[in-house]
Length: 442
Image (cartoon, rainbow, N blue to C red; front, side, top):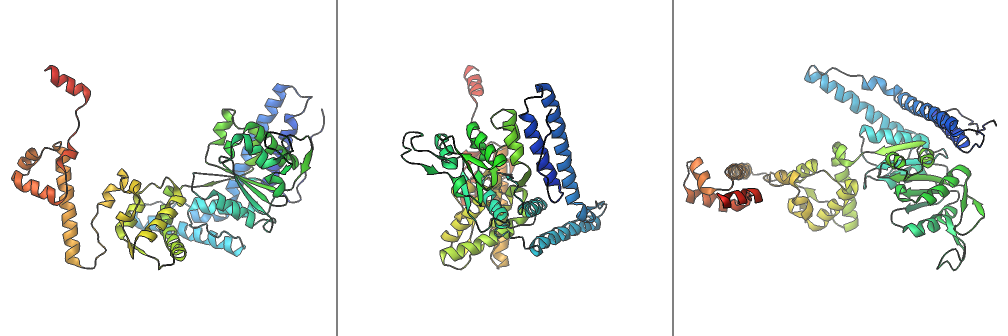
């Protein structure tokens, strides 16, 4: 049995040990002298060792801040306040530490624990040649984080090329990434360099990496392992020196189990694996993001930043933001364009105003006025409207029945409903087919 060799790192770190493990795993996988059963057992042991190293790395990374996260038993409001203050102080100190290290993360706003952890990992990974895998929902800012890694690396002055693997047809993705030889396929009228060759010495960002075909995954693995690309239709290998940052909103581990994504590529890309939390889990950062986009929109539109109505802020707090930060930015730009000085609920897109989870907030009274009497009137009207709507819902939209229940004349109740623009028929439940059939036979 031959001796397995791996590149020795000049400085010992968890990342370098994991990289060595990956090299050994690859050597074992292609060793012809081992039986399949032996390979499987050794690879399982290497996998367990890899997971232990990663877990240990995470623990050590936060050991320095352990004092700040000691659990304070919240037996009183004072205890809860102390716990919250310690956590906030720690997050502020960790963010300041990133700035003091000259770590550039322009455009990445917020200070949630998950986001700070992601930035800290990127700070350590950026100067290395290791590939980075970014996972997060659509619109969370994966490409922005990829640029953070590039801008803080030794390749910052070289090309940063972004490729959306899901936007390029499957039959063209390999040609785009790796290039092609003249005559390789219909329309290939000349030799063409791929994006990997064009990004030599720089960084390639592969968004939606889960959309890459299995054949394309094999070629990408060769780039990561040997630094070589093979153009479509050519037998010649070309050396390239690039850093790969990949991103996905899919569960690649599940795709590995389903055999739609190569296991060896998954672990090669995931040596440095970071996660960007969705906006719905970072609601504390909404205020910062909104103010940032308001100022940015005012510059692009050539007008003063608008003010947002308090109930619009309340609406944003309850909205789920399926499109994450991209959706928030687009909404703020829309409001900044349509509103004169103050943005309010009517300036929102139709799909947001009809969202059931936020309808109650949208119907809240406008408290932006400074006239106390107007505030009282608005609050009273809103409470009366909600009371009538609740009553109609209980009696299935029957006005006569509600009037009797409230000991009120039917005529006066109908006047109130018209005043609040409430339509009783909207509260009448439609009879199901079974019920209709039962009535017909009775």
